[in-house]
Image 1 (cartoon, rainbow over the protein chains, first blue to last red):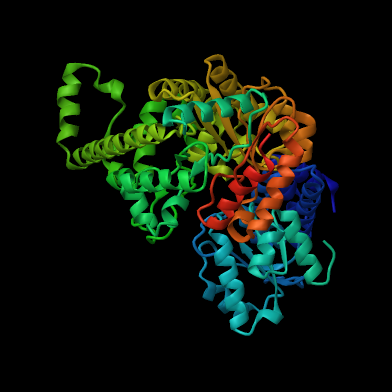
Image 2 (image 1 turned 30 degrees about the vertical axis):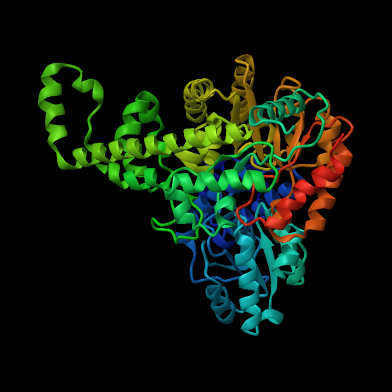
Length: 211
Length: 416
């Protein structure tokens, strides 16, 4: 593995990162190795974000570079090549709220950190969360929202999960700019976070791993 | 003898001005910076009706102001749904349009100007707005996509032949009619608002602000390029992004000054969305956000106006920049922020307004609200440079008993 690619991604040098990937693939380096390397660089960005040394733009731009790398690598991949996942997460912005920026960053970072993520989108009805838990058997459910109306939607979702007899099977985190301990208590969730670092930490904790 | 409305108005405005100027007031006021659906919700009025019935909405707002003991009548951050309906807005959805009657209005963020269109936009901002952006933000304005560059029509031959032909085309006529309907809706809204402002003043309540002025970076990020788009632009198209921000700065400042003069209200609300801690690095903030924001604030102060920035998100990491603003001139309103750090860094330069968590007002108990107010007054009571409000104005879902608790705690702990 080269540090060159990591450096280019972490340094936000998009053109360099894509050129390095092209070169590595041409020289016969396994595509899965190249992808792992790129994901490792994203993890470095995630850790820097947690320490306050990187910010949302680095995560968004990093995600964009990742997308470009995936496009280059895809034709070289044979078979699904699924690596073992660290855990399963179902996530969505709750009913009545259409904000997706924070959720999308969390989805990206969970994905590059090795989780199987099922993103239900925005304005997600409570029943859709219940159905997804039945279908995907996640350990973690993420309820996202930016508006204050999301508090009641989050609570209704947690209640619906309990009413379906699924509450003991999942840990639930509520997230978004207005989330705090107060919102966690009100909704009956197991944890809260107002940024991606918190989401990664809770997920790691609840799936038995390290952040 | 009880004070007249006029006397109360003067007292309340003076109290506010004193706090902004860091002079100790007689007591801590409660002033919601902005209000959307709370006043109508508690009266059982649907969000749909609040958007269409201006008189009803504004009456509920005045009643809430009296009932909850606010010092100012908050300007409503809710614009008339009739205007959105008139042009078939796609960028802003409204209850009773394609949203349920009980939903709040929603801004649909998107790339209404694409990255590859920066060149076209910078070469011809007005033309691109007319024929490219308008059709994207409103279905009723689709016909404007047919309009050629206006300079091509700048002689009578082409105006008559090409321009006349365009004005005969049904899609263009439909767009012009939609714009006239928007004007009608705006006139009705403005008349209702003028009467309301006068009524509130007669009752003794100044209005919080004359107009909302979005900082130039946020105009570009919120309404042209989206957060994702403007973020990628910082890396891929930094020069075009900066040129567009600079282009927006001139009319932004001019509109603020003009609105203050027109409404006879010196207070200008500046909602800030993208400059918060976490949203960009210090280097990016210094390059892309701070210069035009600071320029806006300084110009308003030079014009004798009072900037009311709503520092949305967590501005704790930006306090060092806020310390560069003139002391005693800015009514800083804070969403989430480290109160202690604010007091240490800015306590002798800027008043502190807001910061009661929306979650507390929506889901907490009156006692929790009172405890939080007491903490604020304990911290800022030495100077009295404090105005009470939630972090983002009155949340739509605030519990009325918690809004009452806010005022009760102000009276209990905040009379000097």
